Image (cartoon, rainbow, N blue to C red; front, side, top):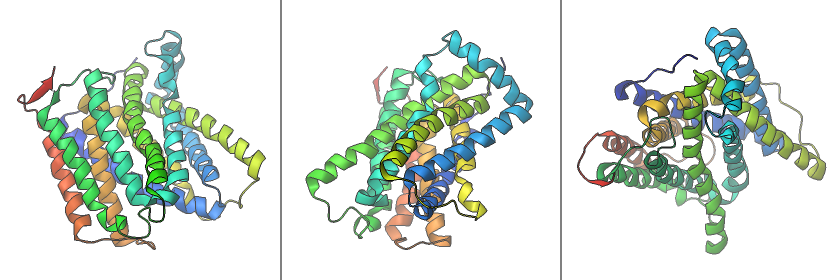
Length: 326
């Protein structure tokens, strides 16, 4: 079994930010595909199918990919990690469900705040529990401060959208709070997915194998869901001809693979915060360069995005003081 490399913070954090840049691009593509197909679940199935095809090809073509394939079944049979870690891709499928069924009611802004809140809180928890391959990490005061500042910064960055018609207006406060629990839960689970993927990568020897297993699990979950939807509501529209509608899956391959590689070196919290920063920067870039109806770029959007970067730096400082619990 080959070993995955340990990356220094100065290299790993920019990689996390770069991977996060792909999230809004993937979301824009999959969202547009869902509109064309008139079926959000079908769009997710298409995305996972293309991603699975890409990962099968990569696993067979690259020597490191073939080496990882050899270690998947032995690692599962020998229970080198809990078997349910192999279903981490199902969390990605749940995240897609959360997007499909709550963004319409909440708007993109509230959905972002809810998922970031869940992911940031669970990042602290997962690191403290030592679930990921980096082991236990102390919950220091500066890490808590950086996490809280991240949540506040994201809320500030999306505040112009919260004031608009896409911010969840028209939904009663009671139902709104109930709906909000879904993206919060999705965000909470993302950190656990990254921790499980990081641990599996250590035993597979490569993030290529981990990404492949993720896409297999997600494809199964979404495929069954789509078949149920097909039986109940029937098919949507035909697949479009434009090639760019099918880039969501390959982008997901990069995002999942980089995350699985980085959590061993950076831990779950810092990896997640770096990707959150990239997500906000990518969203800002898309809204400036390729705006769509409803895009809002105001001063709080820009300042909140860059304040998030400051929060990431705070959370990554290895200050020993202020440790809450060791």
